[in-house]
Image (cartoon, rainbow, N blue to C red; front, side):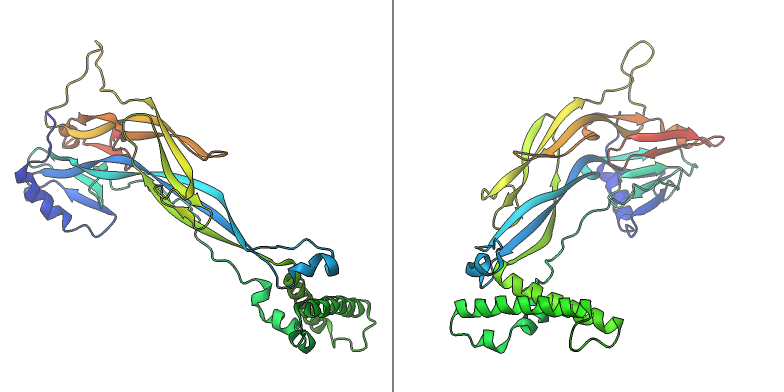
Length: 359
């Protein structure tokens, strides 16, 4: 019979959870805990990290005169556009309270288990647990200041532009200033300026300043475009049957929002079961019995998961899922054999046996 944790064993479990200070913990079967170790099998969840780029368009104060003086098409209204740049799905295991078990070893033996902070098994009788590895995830990035938000914009403004009696007059003066700056740069580069910079470094600084002033004045006509990124992670807990859900939405006003915010365009996630875990069979094709007092582990199933919107697919991958599988067990006597104790490594994501052997 599969041994789920009893009320009495909860006392043992209570003494164990108080020492959860590190991500990986070692628990040894001993007389103190009556040679019993408590652990919890996981279900598999999918964390979906979505990165959205926000592009904000802002008109310049002289946009009505951009075509007249500069022959350029300007931004005519303030608006923002959002575009999904990346979708990164990552699976992980989440402990399930109803799948908490106690495994009892022979008295006098000292097998040990490596558990994570949620009491999910990582290994037994081996401390060198392979790391799952960190996934590089994007981070939100604020928009950089536009050229009109820098000191160059103030430097480019002349007293005549500031004191102009109308926007039309100020635009005319600003356009004239642009051509004046361009001529000054051209004269310095060609060596025809009345006052040349003292050396190469000084010339570089002067030319950079003139270029930035011109850029600021041009932005007063054509407007500015600034970009920032927004990143959010949504957690999806797959069920046991095929399904399609709205994992998130992208709003024209707020970017990434929750799935129940109907103001946004939906981002879908579909899960299709491709294989269900089954209990092992013996040579006769009969389902094996669960070992007496066995160390429970999962035999997971497989699913195909896809993340997409109405017009684009962002991610598609196959992965094992604990909840699509079954629970079977290993004979605990394997791990307390005095001559050749076995060891095993488990998947933190599914609870499956990854490696088993003897030393």
